[in-house]
View 1: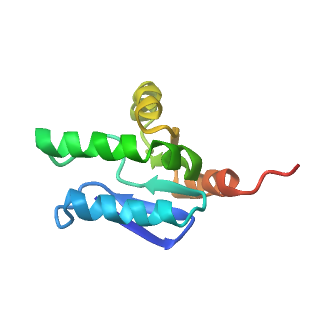
View 2: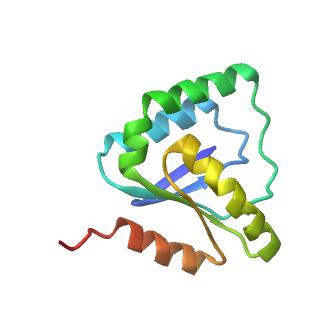
Length: 130
């Protein structure tokens, strides 16, 4: 997974890259959490993009990493927004989003366009008025 935080707090993810190891990706993610600032993950790969295969050991490492960082994930990651133009895929993605949030601790949202995703992301990181 490639993480592009050049437009922080909007963090773009490319999940299907093969040139980043899981360890590198998790270290980059930890650096984002260490900023102690809210941010939004955004992916424009669509919901049916083929994901790289993970070994059982990699899946175990990912689950352990997620458990260690659960509170920071919930506090700082406001959502993971996936851009998907296909209506059927968006509807199917909504069912998956429930399990996603239970596992990761932050919501998975689906936008139709990049503009819609960015508008939603801006709302999510905007400070709440008291």
